[in-house]
Length: 314
Image 1 (cartoon, rainbow, N blue to C red):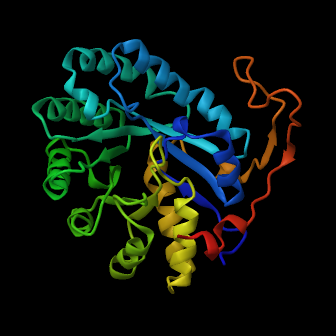
Image 2 (cartoon, one colour):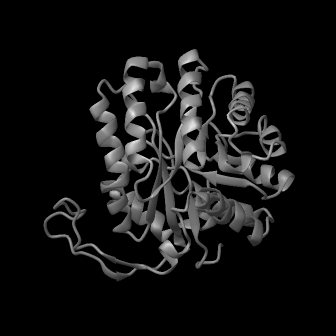
């Protein structure tokens, strides 16, 4: 069992797609901070206003909703690779980005990169890298599901072409095929623990055993698909069971994410360490997370190790 006082950061999770109950479970499991990258909705957006409202929700309502459970919510803002292929709309979205990347809680440009590795994806990836360099913001890269190794290497090479330093770039969705290339080039290597695809937690244990914990972090990327918002604490519990040290677990499941995204100047440990209280009587735009008859929680939020017991790891 993990130390009940252990804290976790999930640096890639799409909470817009999750229920409020998930926030309660996450906090109980020890998750104190999350990063929500901008991504697509499962179907193409058709108007730039849809992007505007979505970005607004990431820095507004979703940030509030997380706070009601004692979780600090951050986000990365960007044009995702799938929708970069709609060039007429992509041009309008590029004009929106500078209006949001300076908002409170925005810790990077992301998630950006390649999907089918088209010319349009390459164009808007490069434009967003230039924006990140200009604003000195970290970059969160989505690596493609198809032809992953070539796409991952290409993603990093283009970063270097644009003068974006490797220490400012989090390369996500790594696997056994890409991890060495990512680490050898000096980039942060993020791994997504996602059921039946990307990376399983048993495989992740072997990655940490082989490569250690330097510049490696894990996330859940939980979204509207079949996914698990507790992937980070569950994998931490499995790591401990398999003999990985608490120091390495802390780095992979907390400290490395803080170090990487903290370069934005927007994410500090004091954000959650110095304020461990909630008041569910609060409202955002006159809206509450509560419904009629529900009793608000007011006061200090405590974590529990119950959600990380080994009986729910798999």
